[in-house]
Amino acid sequence: MSPPSPPRQIAVPISNMSNLSRQVSNSLNLSTSPNLSFHSPPTSFRAPPSYTANTPGYSAGAAAANAKQLKPFDTKDVKVLLLENVNLAGVNILKEQGYQVEAIKSSLPEDQLIEKIRHVHVIGIRSKTRLTERVLKEAKNLLVIGCFCIGTNQVDLSYAASQGIAVFNSPFSNSRSVAELVISEVIALARQLADRSMELHNGTWNKVSKGCWEIRGKTLGIVGYGHIGSQLSVLAEAMGMEVIYYDVVNLMGLGTAKQVKTLDDLLDQSDFVTLHVPETGDTKNLIGKTQLDKMKNGSYLINNARGKVVDIPALIEAMRSGKLAGAAIDVFPNEPAGNGDYFNNELNDWVKGLQGLKNLILTPHIGGSTEEAQSAIGAEVSTALVKYVNEGSTLGAVNMPEVNLRNINLDEPNCVRVVFIHKNVPGVLRQVNGVLLNHNIDKQSSDSRGDVAYLMADVSDVKEDEIRSLFQSLEELPSSLRTRMLY
Ligand SMILES: NC(=O)c1ccc[n+]([C@@H]2O[C@H](COP(=O)([O-])OP(=O)(O)OC[C@H]3O[C@@H](n4cnc5c(N)ncnc54)[C@H](O)[C@@H]3O)[C@@H](O)[C@H]2O)c1
Ligand SMILES: O=C(O)[C@H](O)COP(=O)(O)O
Image 1 (cartoon, protein in one colour):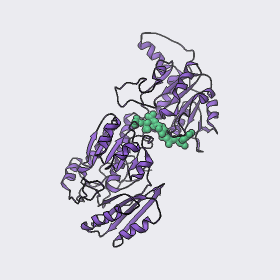
Image 2: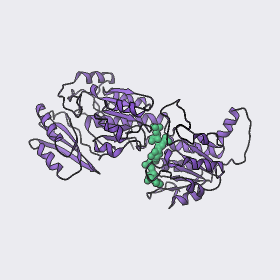
Image 3: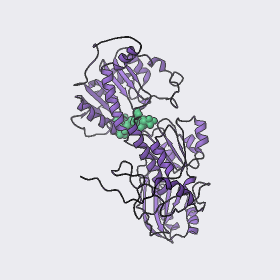
Image 4: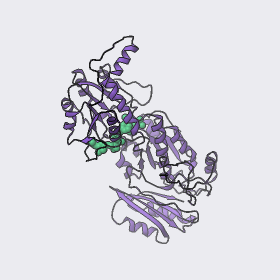
């Protein structure tokens, strides 16, 4: 079967794009941000891709043939802060839009983060940077947050939504990388590979078979059978393992994998237990002393999920007592800000107890750190950010309803896209339609998620000097969280 063909493309060389964006500013100074202006670029300006980097045939320069390009402001005024070494693929997509991009390799201490976040419209982070209510309160210009990773527990999602700030992530681009790492860890633990390697590095020949096993026929217990857990399940079966899994949701097992009813059932039957749940209130210390006691004697624990899912002092005790024959840990409650930083007791007060334990693999949160995963995540999240900033599309947002409208066409020159993020209370649509009363609404879509609702409307025959008053009337509605006018 051949893949669906991408929309026809307008051929604008990438090198010309940022120049174009600088040439096409007409300052109406209408914006959610005081220092930004709105403008309508020429028709030759490249559209952000209307489909994602994962779509077959994706090209960053693709645009629907007759689509008008919407740019909410002069693109060179859009300020982007990227932390934690976001992949170049992602950085470049944002730069090609003409946005001002500052990319920093590490995360920032909270005071420096607050100082910087005040000035930006877009922030890109990975798993380390905490965007708490305290930090977001200072982010007066912020429109959107991109998590260039799977996890979004580091962001106060509901507070962000309440401020009209959308959050995007990459839900599965590094899943395969994590699943492959777990397979390597299962074998490495079963064969005590890390210890043998360390011994030989230190000059000691120690050829042993005692306590070393094949993984064929052993039972792998997967806690959390989502994107990573289910991918891992297939790989593990291909290696000859029996797979069981526990999840709070009833899910179809792939291959011959079987769901068990309780976590205790899984702990009781598994030779290897591997964790793939998100960090939530329910998963904090999901594996503590009680659960470790229920595991088989001489079994193994692997945690590539989040640091708080395992009670590490209890794990240290289980390793010392010989209850566990080995463990692999990739994630920690507190992690260093960047490469070269120390991993010691100042960070987590049990680190010394962990270091030096036999058959314990410690890795610096590298589950998703492959070239493939990072470039795919970079392209996917940056594309979503561009589509949100330029077109208002919330497809893929994790804290807002998903709303999208088909493109405004080139033959609709006076059409304005209204984006109205508002409190999800009765009567708002009536009020919005009251503001737009004298205009034809070509198309409109709205949806709600919890306390927040998102409305997009393409309104035709709006003169430039009417845009400001429409904007102000919408902003003044009591339910308003944020208004944007794109044209
Ligand atoms: N080490 C790394 O670099 C790395 C990389 C990617 C993801 N992660 C972590 O792995 C987590 C899982 O990723 P995913 O893509 O598979 O997520 P996912 O959302 O696709 O799957 C998570 C699964 O866990 C289940 N679950 C939730 N709470 C549970 C509970 N209390 N008990 C049992 N099951 C529960 C859910 O129902 C879901 O099926 C992410 O949230 C992230 O924190 C780490
Ligand atoms: O949530 C994730 O995707 C992983 O934990 C990876 O996070 P990272 O991008 O900070 O390595």
